[in-house]
Image 1 (tube, rainbow, N blue to C red):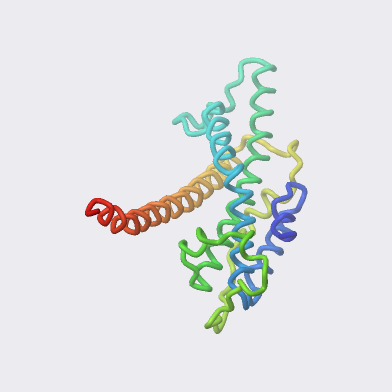
Image 2 (cartoon, rainbow, N blue to C red):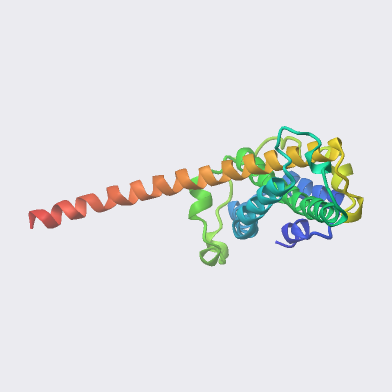
Length: 223
């Protein structure tokens, strides 16, 4: 989907990302496949890069000692070279966390639409875009939601902080570090929630396959 692709673009402003996500959340979808295909696009982007991005953020946090007890440790640069390295790490962290906000927004949108349209994880997993190209395969919703609730994407604070992607504006003051931590924790939580849902559905599918195969094995043993 072009709107999902536009949200993912780094050059898109936070306002534009939120505007597009809010539009996607507020549309009335008459066909299930419309939403499932959007989920497919979201999953494609995040499954390829989400975990790698989270790992990179964690490594940068460790390099900057952001979670250490000493609040001043990121300011303790003994020479110009080390100060420049910390500055570069902060700039990289800002860029990565801004992207993490984008992924979090998309996963919030996915969960929002799953709740509004009562779409199970089993339906999400079973969807195959290659098998859903013909109109005959599209399934209309039997009951559309009477009213779509407001979608909560970015807060005004997040938009203001990440709106300008100019890396030269990054500083290591306490307000910046707290926003970094907040973004990281939110991204980590929503990624873990998504991974747990996927893992639970895979376990359910494997259990169902085992049950289907059991009668066959029994018949073969009897023969």
